Length: 110
Image (cartoon, helix red, strand yellow):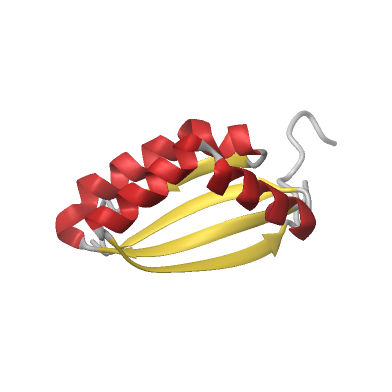
């Protein structure tokens, strides 16, 4: 499965719709650049300022290649420019984790 990148965003609570547009734009751009997008998650209940983006890559070398492709793509450049122009992201942190458990087996076990 590789590694999973969790991006924690602190967003402007008054610009949540702009963040949601930004997140939707990654729906095609991230997979096209080579990562497996799990999804972007915007505030719904509780914190009005915390959002997440989650995707997987094979390893850190694959991550570096993916990031270069994303930054060079027209979709990536446009979305990065949108975020910079609209200033809805106040803070962004990345964390890389690996899966160390598996879900319980399903079926008829005796």
